Image (spheres, rainbow, N blue to C red):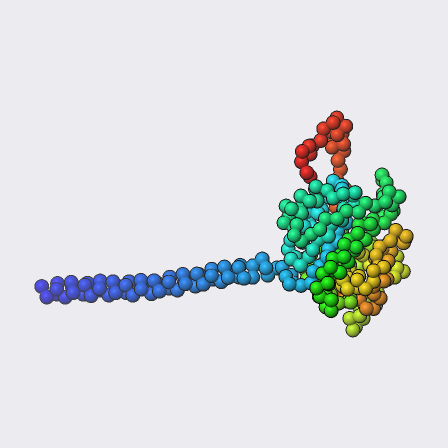
Length: 329
């Protein structure tokens, strides 16, 4: 009998011990779960904080930088809207860019107006027009290099920008706001980093950087000496030009344009000399400001959109129909 009592008491003690261990373990697990939940919530809060405080804005260069007037000559063609749409997506990400679009036409077009409205850039753009004289227009199957392009449009943009700068300077006669002018053709590819670099151009300077896929080379670039001064360019095409660089490879401090009203583009210069024609009034090679990691980074590419093959569309039009009837493509 005593042995049986002792046996039962032993089982009770073992049972209570197991219950006690399980109870302690459950308390410990609860604390771990609470700690884990708190840690997860902390991580989530951190993510939300990053998203709100650093998210999209973290990738927007120089929100309060100088205004960059990006000049884009454009003309009506099947790929026009596609190319301007691509540019608009870049400009939307760079808040200190003001887009100056100049159409080669006798009036502004609904297509460009609609594009600016739909991209939300109406407040950060102006839509101008300037028609190229007939004798300087490319005809039929003329190669695109046969005659200078964009001369009339870029000069119209320069006229508008100079007037704008003079108007803005009326309230600040001693120290007008610093701004930059860049010729942003619609068939190139641009990194948003380029505009961050551009924002560092000093007053009285022309900034320069490499351009990819141009002039028969993988990259055209300024050549610097050990002190970081521009000695020249590695251009393979007409290297004898005073400034053998691409239109996409430089930007101008606006004060230089105000001080030199004669600086503009011309129909009277030979092929490839448009860049040199405007820059000769503004700077010399050794005084240019090298950017893009001492001209080691490529942030813009001279790409071209392939001309679409529209043989079926032409055949359709001969029958009085259009695949895009009532649509803006």
